Length: 432
Image (tube, rainbow, N blue to C red):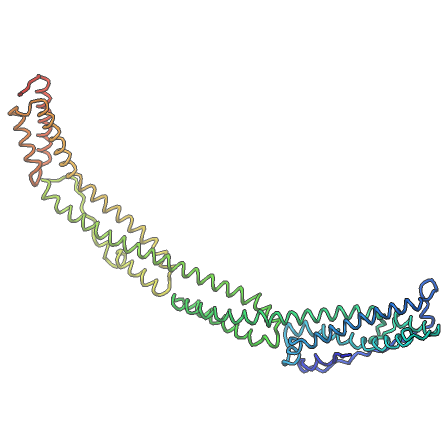
C-alpha cells in the first residue's frame, strides 16, 4: 500500500517550521462495545459482508490515490519547486487533510487485516473474536489525533479529501493545458496590436499594450509556481484588459477612417467652393459686357474667407489635417463639423450671389422668347408684313441680340410689339 508522506507538501512550502504530525492509532475498545442496538450481535455473515465492503472501498481509494500520485501534473506540481499564492492557499489545506486521513487509512488497513484473519480464514471464530471484529468494523475503532472514527466515516472523509485534492490537481492541469497556451496566443495578439497602434500613431495605446505584454510575460513565469493564481489573473484581469484594448484600438481605427472620409469630403467641398467663387467673380465681371446698366447686382463674396489666416477655410483645414497627423482625431473631427458648417454657409452665400446676378440674363432670355412667340403669332395671323409691327420687332430683336443689351428699351419694344399685334388683331386686319 502506498502511503502519502505528511511532510510532502511542507517540503515545498515557504520555509515555515513543520507543524506537529498528527497521530493515528487503533482506539481502545470500551466494555461491551460489540453490543448492537437492541442488545443483539451481528452475525458472522454480516461481519463478512461489512469486511468485504470496507476492503473494496479501501482498495478503490488506494488505487485512486496511486493514480493521482502517478499523474504527471501531480508530480510536476510537487517536484517543480516552491508553490505560492492561490495554489498554495487551496492545495495546502487539502493536502494536509488528506495526509492526516491517510495516517488513519494505514491504521484501518491493519484493522481490516486483523478482521479478515478472524472471519475470512475458514475457521469458526470464538464469540469473543466476533465481538472484537464487530467493534473493529462498525464502531469508533480508529483514533485520529483524538477523533474517534468508524471505518465507514474514515473512508467517507478520505473520499471527500481525495476528491477535493484531485479537483485541485485537475484545475492545475487545465491551466497548464489551456491557460498557458492562451497566454502565449495573447502575447502574440498583443504584439500585433502594438504594430497596429504604432501605425495609427497612438502612443498611449502602444504604451498600454506594452504594459499588458509585460503582465502576460509575468503570468507565464508564474504558471509553474501558482497556476491557479495565474488563471484567476488571466480571466479576471488580463482578458478584460485585452478586450478593452482591442475595442479601443478598433474605435481609434474607426474614428480615423471616419475622419479621413470627412477630410476628403472637406477637400472636395473646398475645391468646389473655389470653383463656385471663380464662377461668381467671372459671371459678375462678364455681366457688364452682356447687359447695359444691370441693376440690383450683388458683389461677389470677399475671397479672404477662403485663404485669409487664421480662420480662412484653407488654413483652417490645413490645421485640422495637422491635428490628424499628430493623432488628435477626436479634436480634428469636432473641428471638421464646425468647418463644414462654415463651408456650407459660404457655399450658400456664393450660390445666392450667382443666382441673383444671373437674373438679368434670365430676363433677356425671357424677352427673346416672348418676342419670338409674338412674331410667330403675327405670321400665323397674316400680320407679319405690317410695316409698323415689323419695325418694332426688328428694333427689339436688334437690341436683344446685341451686346450689351438694354433690357429696359428691349422690354418697352416687346411690350409695344404685343400691343400693336393685339390692336391689329382686334381690327381684323390681314396682309395675306
